[in-house]
Length: 503
Ligand code: AMP
Ligand code: MG
Image 1 (cartoon, rainbow, N blue to C red):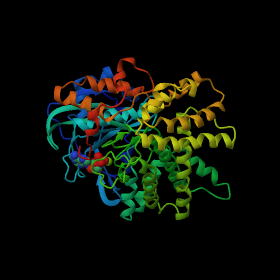
Image 2 (spheres, protein in one colour; image 1 turned 90 degrees about the vertical axis):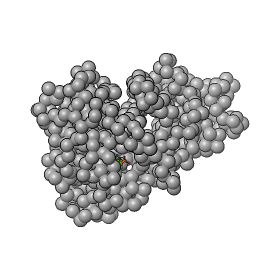
Image 3 (cartoon, rainbow, N blue to C red; image 1 turned 135 degrees about the horizontal axis):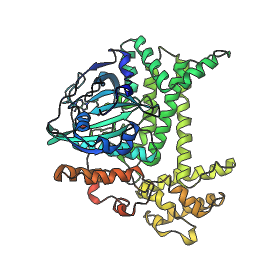
Image 4 (cartoon, rainbow, N blue to C red; image 1 turned 120 degrees about the horizontal axis):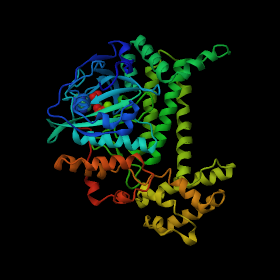
């Protein structure tokens, strides 16, 4: 048997049927396994070898269900492009169940693309191979970068015909996360005035995912000001979200569809669609072709996350006062900028907490002018930071990093300040270089790379590039001499790739 009965915990199911509807997966025609993620398999105490068989293939695409799973589609609502949509839900995702591993961690197992659900609206409940490859690769890339994300365990392709702009094949990815609960899950019940359900959901999230809050709240009972556990919950979500967004901005990741139904209550990067990593540094970059106003442009992400958190706060107003909500939300900006500045300082090679305000200022004052310069000169974001590690001194300036700037004089002027700030930090060039190479990735999942893997898979039934890029993305800070062709500038054709929500 694939998974043992006693390992299934299925706690979300216990919330009751206001939170989901039971829905069996729709079988896929002639499925085959495309990939298994060794590392994610280990989270379920499995080896990839043990999963590489027809039994797991059928489980992974929903063609056979394990007797201890209970496939359900969760209901939620959400603000999409700023407008409230009163009812959404898992339109093509099914939660099969939850497994407790030998380390005591709980992992929910979800199939994405396993057929229609009561929440499919006009959709067919399917995901095509193209978009599945993108999510599969990107969730691992985010994991490799150290950013909180849902995981992908396996991908299945099939001969099921699915029509998008053209005929494509239906695929399924098996996603794992401690929970897939979204901001929109709370918004649904709050908008219907179902405060009992809002509380049930909040209690569920606290007890399973933020257990420290219970202790904090209990400890506060003896003090004069007792803490409201729901305010503490919201404050934790604010902090986790702020950290996640700071990390997105520091690696140049644009999500593309930051609707509140795509925001995880655990601060995980969730629902990969038309995402993109910046090539050249363009703060106005819009990766989603359907985002005509640029609501979800790269530079708007921190502000949008704040806006989304405000919508979550509103949904929790039956559990905390406006003052409590405002107080918790006010921490967002500071948490975001502290994390962002810390990450950017490290990207520049400043690893120690500055010893005084002057030093702090010298370091921080480097960041905005550099980013302006990069935007003006359209400098490749990833290449710049990786190459900056080789910087020695203006006299023996590393040629390559300067060459990224058409306006060399402007960059040289910045370098003078940079070197001055470096002189104040007690670290050898070699030590700094090593540390910088652990924070500035050599490889990111550029769109053209995913596209290369997609072309091979869809046109030649060759999945080898998926595996190569997947493995590369698991350790993006390492050198990988055999993969250097992915460490340079994107090819010219990369700029013609167009992505939208349709997948
Ligand atoms: P997304 O932007 O992928 O998070 O999708 C937004 C909403 O549309 C979610 O509730 C999805 O479940 C639903 N959806 C997207 N694509 C499909 C599809 N092919 N069939 C059914 N529902 C879909
Ligand atoms: Mg979604």
